[in-house]
Image: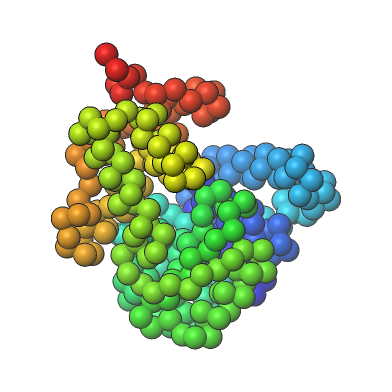
Length: 297
């Protein structure tokens, strides 16, 4: 596989495009918005510069990486000749099903479809295509160029051949792939999101404040980032969507999202992406202070 299409140029999409391009793949980066694509290329360039400063890559490797990326707003032009399509659109079932149904009519018969979904059923996604054996999950972690893990999720009909190929492709990206089965939340978010939700419940119940909860988990459990700051980093809307997938998938009240999480998303306090969540992000997140509505009166 050499020709890769990445659908969605947001945080995950541009990170996935960056990573494939850095390792010599020809990448078509697709988005419906030209401005979003320009922003994505700018972000990739800044992240490549950061890698140069850290001695990870050379200036020549940066230039080659950028040359390997072509941007598109047309799904047919970007995807018709792809060997692998990696979808990194919003975590919304209807959006994903529409994309994969359209791809199925555009792409070559042997094109493999992968979704970067963090919780939505691969089997459900595959059901709208005529190639369920060639549909798989590639759940990259954020930031993609840095994080080593790729959760490789097998749908009910995913073939051994496709799974093995994606495992090997992930290794070629200098990642550590882990094969998991298709359950709501897979492994990472089936464990992580209830923990984050419980941290929000702990805050909501007044057991401790934002900084106190995060400090306990950082110093006591050796987490590099507290659960509330991590929720801000992921996006509170994404956290809420995943909790709802878990709740619907398992039908267990323990997966019910905390009312505080629901209210924060409703009010537009989504974390880093909106500038305010459990923390206020001044200067793009460099200066971290507890959000005013969580400060002790």
